[in-house]
Amino acid sequence: MDVQLKRGLLEVCVLSAMRYEDSYGYKLIKDISPCIEISESTLYPILKRLEASRLVTVSSREHNGRLRKYYSITEKGRQRIDDFITEWDSVMQIYSFIKEG
Amino acid sequence: MNKKDFLRKLRLNLFSISHDEREKAIAYYEEMIDDAIDDGMSEEDAVASMGSIQDAVRNIKDDATARGKRVRKIGPWGIALLILGFPLWFPLLVAFGCVLLGIYCTAWGVIISFVATAIGLTLCIIPGIVALVVLFLVHPMAGLFAFGAGLICTAIGLLLIYPVALVVKWGAVFTVNSFKAIFCGFPRKAV
Image 1 (cartoon, rainbow over the protein chains, first blue to last red):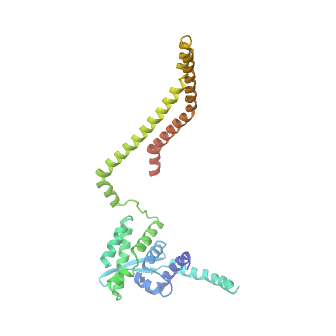
Image 2 (cartoon, rainbow over the protein chains, first blue to last red):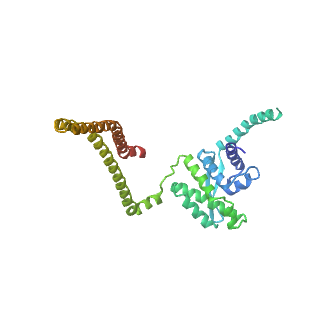
Image 3 (tube, each protein chain N blue to C red):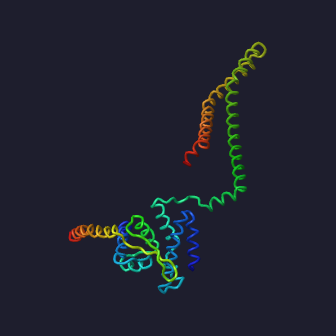
């Protein structure tokens, strides 16, 4: 897949994976991997960017005697998902146009 | 590779980013590895699933620069090395500088000898005329010969004047530019 396209999609995928409950790094990889290829190293800058853009918030919680970073989606993050879906409705129209010739 | 080695290598490779960024990145990978182990993976497999150190470092550094955090070109290790090695590299630098200076002075010596040759030859017409006049009554042929020789030398000298003057000009321009580069150019670059 085109690198730039993938980068944009991954961000929204990560947001989507924490839509209904807070998540953490390892779980995000497991949840997203079946859908799109993502590595721990690629996830790291994505999470940092999401946090910097205030689309997610980070908190540290204790788990099994160590600290784990949990990510929660913000209102702005949910808005980003909605925007993506709206955008892609028009992309799908264009896709049908191209596919059907 | 075990977890300790992976994190240690990661830390080493991240020396050029800020302390905060470095610690955050290491905490991220440590957490990932621990979660993979909790999930049932062996320590070796968990570390292997993190991918290569190179990939990790690249993603961490790219992100740090993209978000405007400064990536230092010379970290604390670089500076320490520079200071410790001072007794070694400084005299070498001075010696090298002296060699360059020596070459430069020699070059000018050669140029000056060419200038002297050109001027000397050009002036040969004077002794030529003197010889003609002095020997005119005593030995006219010798006088004529000396005059001719003097003329030839002068001709050669005059032909040499233009190329030699050009070489002197190049030498002067080179010197001025080097001076500017050494004493004025570098401060501008550091800014």
